[in-house]
Image (cartoon, rainbow over all chains, first blue to last red):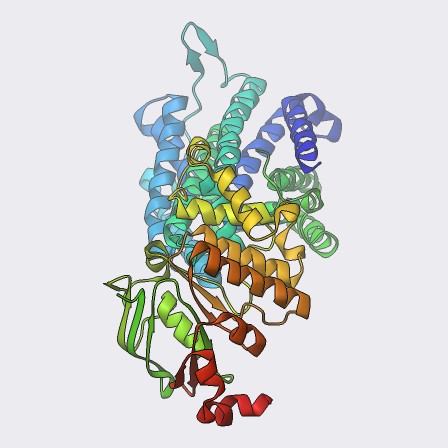
Amino acid sequence: MSVKRDFAVGLFVWAALLTMPFWMPAIGGYTGLATRVVVMGLGAMALNLLLGYTGALSFGHATFFGLGAYGAAMTIRYLVPSTPLALLAGIAVAAAAGAAIGAMIVRRRGVYFAMSTIAFGQIFYFVAFRWSSVTGGDDGLTGWTRAPLSLGPLTLDIRGSETAFYYFALALFAAGVGAMAWILSTPFGRTLVAIRENERRARFLGLSIERHLWLSFVISSTLMGLAGGLYALLNNFVDPRTLRYDQSGEFVIMAVMGGMRSFWGPLLGAFIFVVVQDVVSSHTENWMSVIGLVFILVVLFFPRGLLGLLGRRAPA
Amino acid sequence: MSLLDVEDVTKAFGRLVAVGGVTLRVEPGELRAIIGPNGAGKTTFFNLVSGFFPPSSGTIRFDGRDVGALGPAARVRLGIARTFQITEVFPELDVAENLRVAAESAAGLAFSLGRGAARRAGMDGEVDRLLATAGLADRRNRQVGELSHGDQRAVEIAMALALKPKLLMLDEPTAGMGDQETHDVARLIRRLHRDEGLTIVLIEHDMRVVFNLAQRIMVLAEGKTLAEGTPDEIAGNETVQAAYLGESA
């Protein structure tokens, strides 16, 4: 029964994603907003591999989002105007940082782990903020745009067409999310959930907890880097706020609001967050207080998140 | 050669000596019980043997190797599996998944990022076998956190068995159980010992279980060995009666 339900939910999610540019205007949005949902959704789901599936509280995951964004932006700005190379560079930078930071913090637990992730994020934030000659500092890095994608004889104009860029982003989202679903269905993925459930038991089954945490951290950071790279390409711009702790917090809010124990929950959380932010911020600067109110209501009435009631399994 | 050879082992937490110079040899195929009043150091002793923490002094040899400095995961790989006084399982996973995580760990698949290796290693069959051994086949898809205390205990023992241990250590396997559940668990332990030839050390408070199952008994009190011998010898030991059995009789 649960397998059927997972299948139905998955089908619904993919149908909604594939048609989002067409129905987004009906709720007051536009194609670029749909792309933002997909990109932030990928980030929230990547974070949730740690938060929801491994049980490790990374509250500084904007580090890898921002590094992916700067990696992509700086590649195009300084090296080569290639969208694929820019994304690969962003992913590589985020993965390398995830590997290094992960190795330093996998022995910390709970709030100590969480604080360490925030601290590392703030280091990168201040570097981006201060090193104006390279990063553009507080004003952000401008003077570059994403390049059209050439696929052999065909060219996909992801620069000129917002719709083309949406489907480009969605294809990469699908690859990232598909990889996550696959990982969660393997023995490694099962072991991560087991560590979340009971670390002591896992250790006394002969499992090397730290190595599992580390690998989960690296995979999560890598996917976060992809999301960050797409975010930079979406905006043709990147600034230090992509690295800051409040950006990290927003990903956590998306994951918790949508449901950390459900595979698609963080995507729903990202959808609500991004759309509410867009709609409310056109009326008032204080859009965050509306998000905060929604968040409080969700936590009070759906402690497991909006999709929390739909069960606990990843679509296998 | 003894399978487990613990020599004069001590564990002190600051000034508190939880285990003070205990020696124990367990032969292959033996079923040994450790009894003693609360606070006697039984669980601390288990923690020392299973690698929860290192001893303050003394040596722990297992299967001919000095394991005193090894962590729990390394000792599991050498063949020491344990259960805990308060059942330690994966509550939100179902019964089959709990056993599968354990079996895949034992098969060295915990880092496998494919599904093929687990299939080739026969993990499905292994899980079925464990379910049958523990009498849990009809509950395989139930979430473990929702099971009765006795069933959760059976899951925990089956997870330990999945590690294919040479030594199974059970910390109060019947604690908090009713008569029927106690009977079922005791029968499972007896079967594992007789039919599968497993070496078992258990801590137990239920004296019916201890005197029914154990071939030899070690009595701990205040971190030291009070007596050691067959059930008959222990039952007739006046020091033990005074210090321990006397309280409950």
